[in-house]
Image (cartoon, rainbow, N blue to C red; front, side):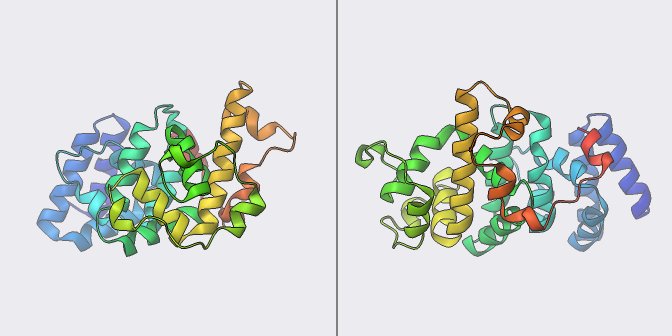
Amino acid sequence: MSQLALIEKTQALIAAGDIVGAESVLTELADSEGDGALLVVLEQLPAKDILAVIREYDDSKESIVNLLITPPQFAHAVVIEKQYKDLTRTHLRGMMNSVIFRDESAEAIEFLTAIGDLEGGSEALADYFTEKWSRIEAFARTGVFDTVEDDGEMLSEQALYQSAYVRPRVELDEVADQDWMQMAWLLRHELPDLFIEMLLVLRAKARAHDLGLDDEEEAEEDDGKVETGDTDRGKATPAARDDDEESAI
């Protein structure tokens, strides 16, 4: 089967909702022609189609797509995941953990950097930590995840930047859970600017939730809240989003 025919078949299966079938086609390609052939196909698939496959991550088995996807490809998929409007963030957390922690921490930094470089990257990271907001605030203030040491006060933006490069109070191997604590540690101690931007967006989302606003209404408000676009490192490098990507989900 030619690459064009394989891509068309994969996209047709995804459009029909047969994600397992689409991933099977890609897996068969890697098995028969090697990982390089799959990488070529992944480069030609729209981010929305790659997202459709990787967000259905099943931790009971390895996914060849999750193992081979590159940081830029993954980042573009992550920033459009919100179009699924999954309020539980279950799929977002699952696919981020499975890809970002698939190898060594050095590669994890590449993935996080790629996400942060795109418009919407900080917002996607904030969505990932939504259910852990108080623990993330405690970590930002005290350097540990235990809220017992936290007095409930939030550091100002200036204070966050002043404490950006403090020495870790806990070592990475103490929180290497391949989940949110390891993710937070890497952001705070390896990518502190991105950690702060993510936290500011997370606070803005929490305030919007308290006011009963959804994400779109939050973006329209101009009452001094932190704006996602202004805190996002990707402001100067917007993600490529064509009409096809916007309407496909």
